[in-house]
Image 1 (cartoon, helix red, strand yellow):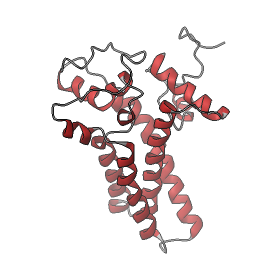
Image 2 (image 1 turned 45 degrees about the vertical axis):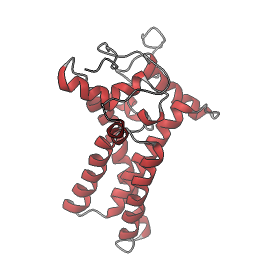
Image 3 (image 1 turned 120 degrees about the vertical axis):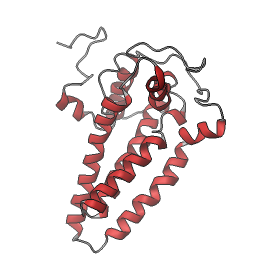
Image 4 (image 1 turned 180 degrees about the vertical axis):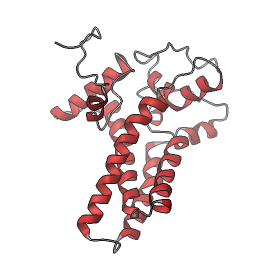
Length: 219
């Protein structure tokens, strides 16, 4: 592991460093392919949503298309929760797995204010979006608008996650959601995996909203 990669315990309880993270690989151009700017993500996936919607027009009635789009969005929220819980927080102690974890997610916990590290790496986002569209519409014969809903869910999640890290929310709802996510970063990263959809934490028993500062359940 690179000397720039901080030693991490089994569960992180907050940022080790602040500001802009160093490159996770030698060549900086490669680092910028692994961790892209938020604008790049928007430019990559907005056309995917537009094409899926366009090709879906006329396949079914308006309400039916809206239902498939909503189903795609809900499917994304489950991907967000389980991907965050199982994939991004699977932390091997050493070797290539530990290095890969740090590149894909560990560095975000160490540098939570770096915008490029708050956006899901294309190493994950492209296979997730592309694979879902292929399986649902290529093999499953679902309307492409299902993929549009899934991709919209992913893109809004990424921007929402960035907002929670870099902005100061004023509405009660946004302050609450930011509080939940900051608890995941700075109190207990074994809970609070649903960022834009925290209701899955309630359902699957990983809610961080019911913990006091000591980590004990709130009475």
